[in-house]
Amino acid sequence: MLCVLHGFTVSAATVRVWQDSPKPVSPYTNWATAAHTIQDAVDAAAPGDDILATTFPVTEDDSPRLSYSDHVGGTLNFCCTTPMPTPETGNITNESRFVNLTAGNLRLQPGSPCIDAGTNAYVAGPTDLDGRPRIVGKTVDMGAYEF
Image (cartoon, rainbow, N blue to C red; front, side, top):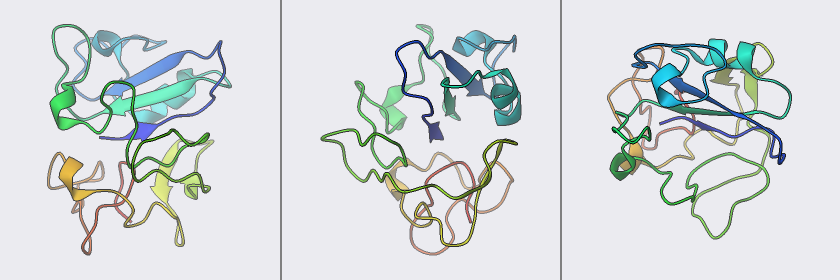
């Protein structure tokens, strides 16, 4: 699962990304109309909006199947986010060092604190969104792309 939280304002909207969304329709505000790509979500998001992406199946009640997710009951674990959620586990607030956040390139640059900072327990499949091995080394990276 990819967890990208951005904005943190009361008026922010949540833009959703799910590659299996049956009918993607901007502004992608629910899982049934979620964007198929992160780039589409970034293009639709306004300043301060949150972008939430999942690779997990979505249940009938319009939520990701949380039994396989690190986002349960409003908690965030092993995410790179600001402000620091508490008392969750494995989160960091350092700059993620994405290749180009503005352009929607959420791949990690060398020296990113997100490299090898995830938890293998939440790996959903053998490859990242580029089709490359999901775990390189001993620990998965935070985010959708393995460095």
